[in-house]
Length: 597
Image (tube, rainbow, N blue to C red):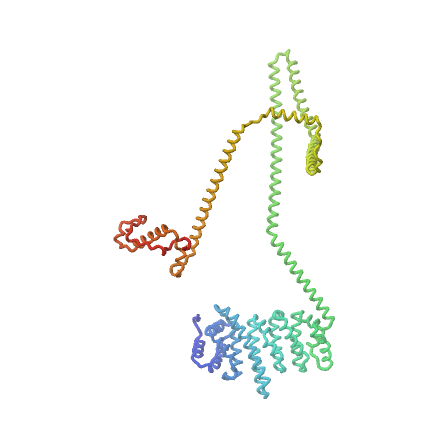
């Protein structure tokens, strides 16, 4: 969607690009530089201009021009270098709006990759150039491209990892030229100063390749290359101690310190190289290891303390709730105790008042009784009252004594009951053991009966026969009973055979019905039916086929009948068609059943 209130210069430029041929587009796009430079930096007007440039696809045109061959572009490397500046300035500070995903995931990585490709092309042209003036000009263009790339990475830090993983950057580092190598290492140093954390996020192979090239540059004969490489390596070591450990422990860099020490005696050594040699010494390595362990311990402590604090903070609401609950429960208990004490005190006072009232009533009753009783019977009355009082006291005392004796004898009673329970369980266990012994005991045979035992058993049998005489049947009655039983048995077997045959017939009919239903359910439609498919549904029964044919033809005749013949019919009425109109043609009926014979 095109924005409203677009700058007329952008509109005119976009129209000119759309109408012009491809060879004139790069020169036309250079006009964007003048528009951007004439706008105040950081103003809202500049942001609006960048959005208009992006919305009218002028940035995409710049990318397409940068991907073309330099020899086909009017102005050559001068035009391309200026377009890189325009592209980097337009991308930094741009708010793409709805197309943010396409801008960040496709356009920006493509721009960074094009900058690196242009750098490689300039590197090749610089190496192949013969004249010094031409080399200086190409070096100037190369610096412009690297500055544009650095400007782009400064505005979009997420592209640094893509640039560090690119093979084009590694090829640029492998350049033998002093100017190209120093420029690339300076750019890499500036990139790491922006965000050095992406250095360890790249693949290990790529990291080793970059580190190998930087170490190789340390051994260069050019002091500029050595100084720049030393600064870059120091920056890498300061940002990541793992690189120093890798330089110390890896077999690839064994002897690096000795080589650098030899160069110190032969040439003028910079401060950075001296510092690097100091870091590679064993003492510094131990200090670095201790520092690393200290940092690791601090990090672990920080994580642990944070975990404990978060855990306490999570438990704080529940602890407060538990504290409130305990306080309220304790307060409730105290209030209950105070109320109970008040109730006990009130009850004690009431009992005391009741006792005083009862004492007063008893004394008043006694005085009234003394007034009623004859003076001669007063002693007798007093003696009866004393006897009743003594009986009441004795009754209470005896109850108290018996209760006390019961409480004293209660443990012995419990022991007695426990002993009885144990004895009962032991007796049951012994009875089970004796029963098992009898079951699994060896057979010892029957004991021989004595004459006295035989006589005793005979008397028992005779007594049983006398008390339980048996019914005796004659031979004729026995034969009749046997014949009747044989007849009943034969009748039972015959009826059972008939029932079995009827059950088998029912099961066969049910199986045939289920088979027919299944066959009808799986039958194809009339459009899909072939020549032999209807033959599978022919019926062997002529009455069934005739009835089905009659019903089918009746329905067809009724459907084909004129409308005036159907007047007055109800949906449930039977259809009456003369039998003369029905033509029974057996053998062509669509009726469920078995296959034709």
